[in-house]
Image (tube, rainbow, N blue to C red; front, side, top):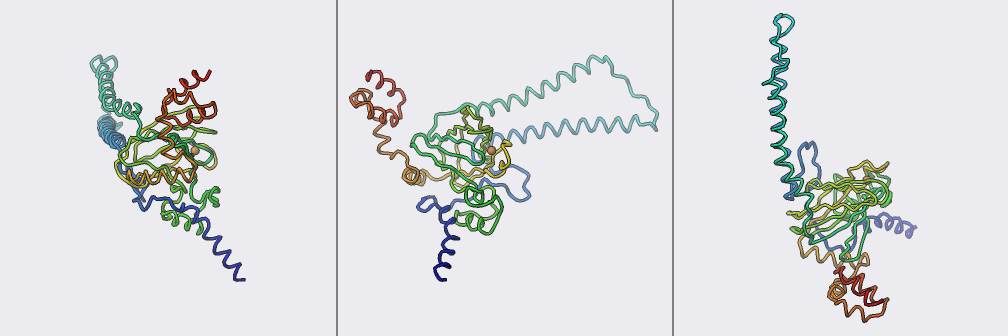
Length: 333
Ligand SMILES: [Cu+2]
């Protein structure tokens, strides 16, 4: 009887403990990038991209408001002045050349004005800078996978409470416990994942985005980034997060029945915490230990050629400098 109780108690503890990822060095972080109750505006901007986007949105909103008020005003004026009761015939404007020129030129001027501000923002997003950290993310039905190619490890990231973590996409007491064990509250249900993409604060992060089955879309609103994950294509986005914290996003391309249950969690941590996490993750997910990776990167091409073919293959894999690989194989032949 006692043993049964013990086993039952252990079973209830188990999922929570697994999700807490024992040994994972990332401690408590503030939750910054999350929707708020009754909120209608943007999430706090923690990258230059997001700030520029939000500024552009505000600027265009002013233009939209002026145009809308102007048009509604004209309609109102016409309604009152030329109403059936007043029996006043409006002036005819057909073939009024000055007015036709004006209503052609004015919209062009407005569009050029908006373009002058929106295009630089677009280019800022699309011109991918040199990366400090490169991460590849793949959308699956229905979760995200993350790969740190420089360190040779990858892991998957499942929504807490999804079938992958033993749930059925509903908030149950067990899921509440799992959330709590992973450092979240039930407010973060459908946002929090069991593992997270981890990046250092202030670093230029380039994320390569692709899909494995259908089109998904990877986004973090607080970073001002969103990119479709298209099978067979590798798209890129970049960001430089300025504040340590937890940020959430959700798959933003309708991708099937569990589209709503494949959220994205990104943890922005200090450089030291990132390095610590990196070593933990390399051990946990079987990545290339950093000393080995560094040594591989330092191997010169002639040195690689002196190794036998199998060893050379290993060196090729580990060499961070891609140009060395063809040099080694040419000498080999
Ligand atoms: Cu999806």
